[in-house]
Image (cartoon, rainbow, N blue to C red):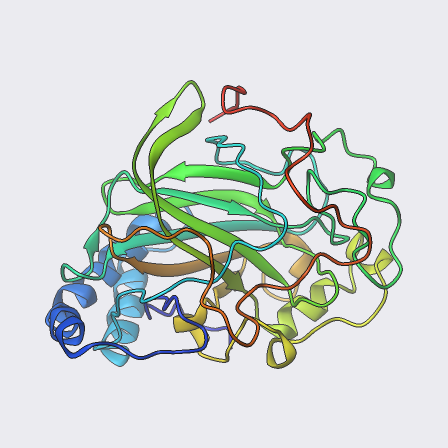
Length: 325
């Protein structure tokens, strides 16, 4: 499932891939532009990784030709899940000292209704659990299996903000995050939550206004995830890991269902980290409320163990909280 970058645009409905004839005509008309964007987007996203322009163009060109006709508008979205907090912090590095295998995440946002052109200024928000399955703001939630208490990892991370953040897309629609490879919690596979916002703006280290165009999740190859989970600190969390085939949200569609392309920083040494890439198609005119598509696993799972319900903790940071860029 890993390998060369995949430029399939992420579809939002994990259970129903129907598309109207009108929308199909609008979308397939932009496949040539999408191929050109794939090359430019790959070069821009990995410009600082040592990949040569020739190598990037060759890889992107091959992959784009293989995935012609795959640029589809997101018809609906997966729910935001039980662990969302509206912290609005704009920053590239979201680790806050949390330990784990480094992950550089690069996402390209394109307009699937306009020939897959870049969407500069789009705000991409992500959040995910730490190496033992704990989410900031919900650190008393039992991740399932056997894991140390979240407080035992020795980090000085803020319990309400770690592994959460926004980035604003550049002229090529690209955002980049520095984070760690997520752990897991019962009953979910390894994943990252995602929202794409447009129409807002950055204010004092936060993102304000606008609307949510898409809510979804990103996924990881099972073999890579399970190899990482044998390493410290992940290995201190024991129990039954849910594979992609058994996950309640992932539907087996590969990149079109949110499966990241992963590239190791150093071959044969997963502890050195990975680079992850995916192109996400949105409809900038659409507004998503995070209600999910329903059916099957569309609700994203219920909080495990003693996870809190209701509103976020009272001491959760406000939208005026400061953050590093």
